[in-house]
Length: 182
Image (tube, rainbow, N blue to C red; front, side, top):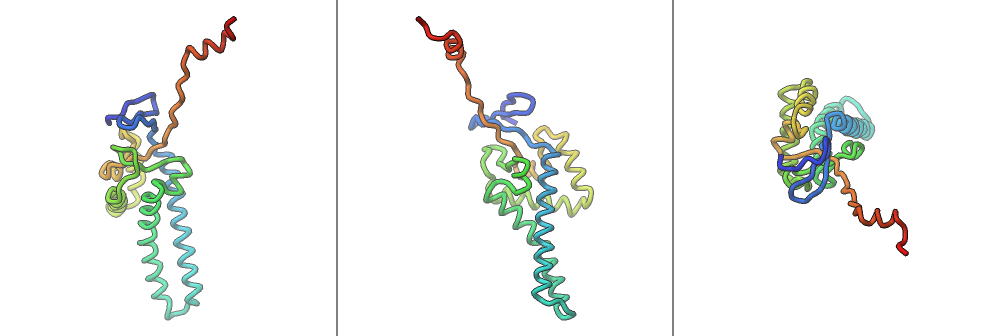
């Protein structure tokens, strides 16, 4: 990483001079848990609403099952990709003050990076199943940039922006402390 380390947690971006901190696995996990909970609630509400509209009977059971599978497959990518592209964060990331950025520029990633990030995560879940989250947590805890494999391949970081502290000149403070000159 080309960015200069300010202290144990804070880095200074070499291009823009912005200060940021890398978001760790506990905060990322809390944000992801909230996001998955929101996606689940919206999916269940949609399926329940569709069932009520169809006045569930034997003829509509197949249609309802198809709708539930389609909503489970489509809602995740729509939710994550839209939030990342529009705001640079999901509601879960917002709750922990995290932001998804391009590793090189600290700006919002371009579309193809977001899609790649999502597809790599889905591939990891498809291959590793229930072991995905624990393995990603271990990976991020030892990774220098706290990136999961999906972040590394997409060139993204999850950061917390740190405001620059105004520098106080020592002469101004000393003059104020002495009081007016007579």
